[in-house]
Image (cartoon, rainbow, N blue to C red; front, side):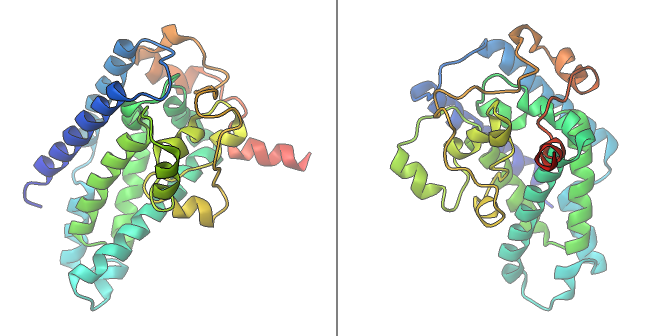
Length: 277
């Protein structure tokens, strides 16, 4: 699709600058670690992941959608609807798929091993929204391409979804102060920073809640919604029990973490096993 890269980059940098400025103007939580070190590591990871995806994958999700549309692959391409009518249901389907994928990364111990790098951050801010291990990014890309192929989502729906996802991921990971009434109103539809921050709590039951990135509906409908952390937004501890050393925030250690670190007791599979005993 023409200008796809420009649209994505413009969306990313616009939201990043807005949220970073908001964090400076009205932060909610005091920092526990060096912002400079975290930002260098987290943002370097963004460029590394982008390079790896471009190197290993011959097409983007939008490219797959164009290919599916040309060959009439997937559910939406079999429906004789105008393209504009397919946009909303396709975006909803993609968002549900993302929720289920996130749930899967918490439920499967091997996948959790890679996803825990995202949770090992000792602070949560705008850069945490892009802090994912390259292996997780590659697995996510395979899943995304498969979903796009199966549902035959319109290319425009994919582009809108990905731009919105990048923006909401930075928004709901941001360390910003939002009036409680406004937060409660907005989170009937969208995942807010106060809602998603609970997902980064060190308490296992809170880590395994609020899996949504865009719409808050899936957590509410599927029973994974949690309204508040036990110790409050400013009293909660961010991260994982087994990774508390701020000196290990460098990129090499982050990349090695899934291979040398303990998975702890955060996997949903571990939680279900404990419930049975």
